[in-house]
Structures are given as C-alpha cells and as structure tokens.
Image 1 (cartoon, rainbow, N blue to C red):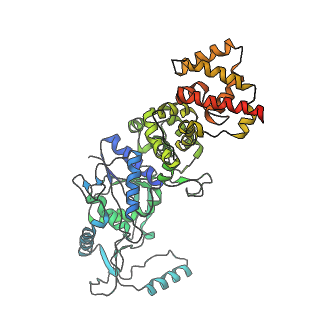
Image 2: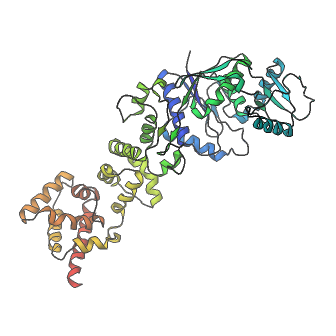
Image 3: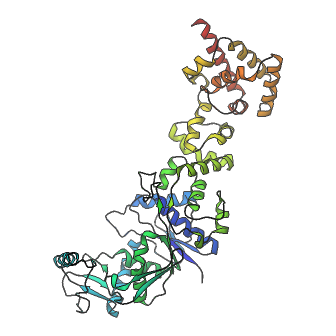
Length: 481
C-alpha cells in the first residue's frame, strides 16, 4: 500500500509554526517512504476564510521547501488525478455522503430546539452527569419535513473506541462518554469532523498525522468511518509546541507564524532543521539537511510529550546555516532585507557577505551590519564616540603612510593585503594595534566590524583609499579643534 498523507490548513490566518511542523512531519514521512503528500485547503468557514491567507500559506510552504504532489496551485488549478483540493469546491460531495448516511440509518434528523438542549444541559449539570445530547430524536425516524433540524451521527452506545495511535499508543474512549454529534447544522453548514473524513476517504489518505489537539476528535471520526463501511486510516498525533513556561506556544512566548520568522531574517533551512528536532530526535544529531531528515525520519521517534520552543537554539542553528550555505544563496535570501533597509548593493555584495557570515545570527542583523559597504564614501557617517577615542592627531600620519603603501598593492585580496600591511608595520616599527581601530573607523564609521583585511578586501581598493583619506582628515582636524 502506497503511503498517502495530507496537510489540511484552514485559510483563517497565517501559517502557524505548529502547522508548519505538522506539514513537515507529513512531508518527511511521505518522502521517506516514497509516498504522496497532499495539500488540502479547508475553507468551509466562509466568514473567516480569506484568499490572502491561502496565498500566504502556500507561499510559506514553498519558502520552507515543502512541495506537494497533489493540491492547489496559484490561480486555483490542481495537480494530480485527485481533487478538488478546496473544501469549498466539494459541498455537493458532502451532501451526497450525508444522504448516504441518512438512507442507511447511520445518521438521523434531530429537531430538538435550542431551548430543549439548553434545559437538558442545565439538568445534567445539576445532576452532575456528563454534558451531552441524550439521543431524544435517535429513534424517531424524522423525515425532511420535520422542520428546522440538524443531522446527527448514531454513535455506538457500548464498549470502547480505541485510537491505535502510532505515537501515543492505544488510546481508548468509552462509548458511553461519546454523544451523537452533529454532522450538519440547521443552516446547512457541514461540520469539520464530518467533511474531513469524507475528504480523507476520497483522497485515499492512509495516515492522518496531525496535532494532538485533534485526538479527542478521532473516536468520532473512527465511528464515522465505520458508519460508512470505509477503511480507517492510521492515526498519529503530534505533541503540542509549548512556550518555556509549559503553556501552548502563543505570541506572548515568541512569534508564531512562519512569515514572522522569514521577516526576522531566519533561513528556511534553519527553521526546517529546528522544527525537525522539535519533538523528534535521531541520537545526538542537531544539524539536519532535508536529505538527512528524510533518510532517518520515523514516526516512532516522535516524542509523546510537548516540546518547548527555544529561540536561543533556533538562532544558534540559523547562524550555523548562514555560515555554511553558499554565498550566492545567502545573497538571494538577504536581498529582501536589503530592499527593506533601503540598501542598494553592487558587485561587492558577495565579498561583503563573506566578512559577516561568521558574525550574523540572522539576515536582518547581517543587513544592519552590511550597509556601510554600499554607502557613498563621502556620505559615510562616523560614530562621534569612536572618532573621539581612536582618531587621534598622531594617527593622521600613520593613515597617510598606509594609504601610500596600499596605493601600490596589486594583489587586493585578504592574503595580499595582510602581506602588504605587515610589511608596512615592520618598516615603520609599528604594531597593528596602533592603526587597527583608526583604519576600522575610517572604513566602517564604527569601532566594531569585520576583520581588518577582510573589510579592506571586500570594500575595494578605490573605496578603501578614499575612506582612509577621510579618516586621516578626521585625525588632522583634531589638531585644529
């Protein structure tokens, strides 16, 4: 049997981190076993579903590299032989399935009024009984002419429904605790637990991998599969993602949407790596490429308990990926952040990035640090505190002499510059510490920056000499102050 899994987000908000991990684990499982990964948009909530949310979800999935084999494409098209992949396009199918249940006697119409249901609940609370529908209309065989009504599923009244969960293990639910639940409301709206079963059956889903907030829905859904006479898929419920205080992850703990992390300068490789390790482990490995993850992923290695979100760990991983990825790839990912900061880079961008890869936890921080390379040499602003501390009168002649040396350097590379500057220091009986900070302030405007030779090489000969000349002028101006 070929494995078929799905990720089924509702377009009522941006793609949540928890949803992204659910999508990732489904995707890894499908890729590991050579199966099919389906994307289905559950948009029957017409009041809250918005097209822009669907677009954002799809964009976030693509940014994370979670490609799907069947499902919606931009513009509303579908791929594969199955579909459609938006619930709003399947309303006729849901009505057909509901009619089948009514005809078989597995579902029934219920015209109990709101007043009766409210009174029943009050009585149950007073008598300290379980709150739920009492089956009043279950055997009345009401017809379509019974007035305003809902449609309910006949649940088993004895024994247990056991969810044989592939992560949590067998989880029993007593039938006596499960009420006859509503499949369709009085206004004709079909409920989630009904339509999701019809969708999963029609799309031949073999494994339902989702968050454990859905665990209590699963016995209802198993009962519905049985009512239809359909095969029940395997279920696997992922533990929740928690904040450091043990509560479910929310905005008070950290950003919760994938787009937030993209905007904050995290790489998709780092976020995927972190989500893979969030509630799942393979020995002591911390850094995973997608190829690594696919090779070793199993549902059996997923933790049974919730995993705590750790921003420090995510940031550390992001820095590791910034260090290791090719410069061209970093440059492409950095471009939106440069655009946002109003930085117009030139052909020195790759060299500039190389000077910052070791010291940039996020792309936003890299964009903040890289701007000095591309400011007009005459417009570069110098930190007054750095000028006061390092641009002393006595350093002016040192900078002028260094400029004379650098003008003759033909090998404008890190190694060539280091050789030339070392020879200059030796010839002038100077230590690097005497000129390092004046040079850095001249080049960057700040007292902290990338390595001296790396900065000189990346900024380019013409720009470096112009900036050093301005630095010498700053030193010389101190004599006139």
